[in-house]
Image (tube, rainbow, N blue to C red; front, side):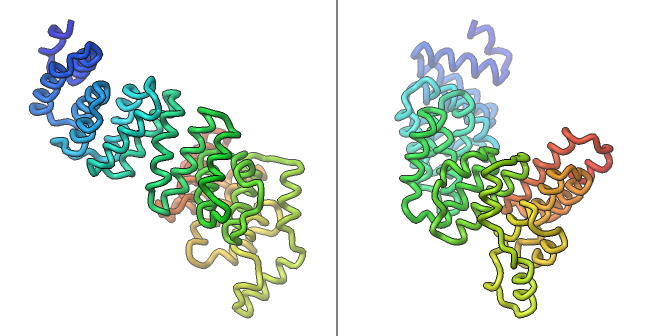
Length: 355
């Protein structure tokens, strides 16, 4: 069967043949076929299949080498496809095998951002424990600005593998007693993934760092409003943030130029989301730094919650006009506009304007 398929020169035929040979422990035959095909057709998918055959043969260093020195340079997009082969090779193996394979990839000089693309296919395949090993390894090695996302991904995988209690215990140990900026990044990742309960479960106590506490309050408010939640949790957050003198303090701060006379920007937005204040008041404050790009998303969230889909679409359009990929509100606005198109009876033209 293998020999009859090969004359087609189709990449899929060679992949099927070589993977079957690897299953039969005929590694040398599989390697010979693939390397010959790779020389004639230097494609990312062929390099990925060579790596899969080597992973199945427990040759982690060889798999890393072909991905690092492929005839065609592999991009992060290519690694997303490689992730499917990685998941096929490792989902039935011990989690420790994943750790060794990832360490080999790092030693071969492959960028961590590319290796992280191997995680989602593992998680989707049901190999949560294996995905946890990958993400946990990067949570220790990732740059500070990426560690929060890696920690959150590791927590998600561990929760699926061993339950919420084990995952929360592990994450709190990683965060330590004074997580500071890590709270921002973990909470932002939770909100982005729609795991709203994690905004409360992971942070039962108010963060000691004031900026982190304010950011968490904002994301909790946005979570409550976008889900239309009513009840004790919403009331508790509203009471925590309430200040009857907020309007007067804001005007005083603007008049005298005293930034510390009023609440932080995050608290002001959180109050607005919970119904404390008007669009005009928030717009007056949204003139500095990244605020003009952040505010429209949250204005859209409240408009949608108050059954004002046209206004929500308009605000999401404003958020998208900023086009700053480093700002999470851009991606959130795009997703919200897409959901609005699916859920709302608005005419097509009005909704397309928000895309």
